[in-house]
Image 1 (cartoon, rainbow, N blue to C red):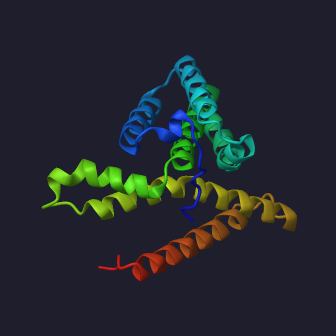
Image 2 (cartoon, rainbow, N blue to C red):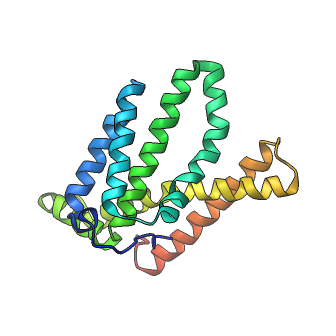
Length: 197
């Protein structure tokens, strides 16, 4: 589930995990509070440049980002209906950029580096905070964004094959069931590794 790291020798791959985490947090926050489509266009260009610098295979990047487009196919029309086209476009760009940045981090940073970075960051607070658990939680959270999008994409494809394209129930129920199954498998794996207390 967490094995999405793609080895490489780019500047982005070689950057330490802690500064990358900080930059990820800053960029996602800046994107989340931005309401100008012009500013979001600039952010899109910046994210595209980061992917180019990371020198990742296009097919790999595409697989990380495309699943969220299936979700947006339903969310954008609803947002247009209730908030107008500009609000819908802003929401869509924000979401795609956040997923892209999370994917860029996971593709260029091993989970072990994330855990080490969290240990370093939280070392002064070791009396109150378990740095290993926080690092693991962060790594799983970042990874689960594209994972959930992939589940939605697979369910949409299966739904289309069965001819149930218009049914929200045929989308929601399998997505929820598969997400819960994935969470259960993850819980079993964490228990097996001693993270059950």
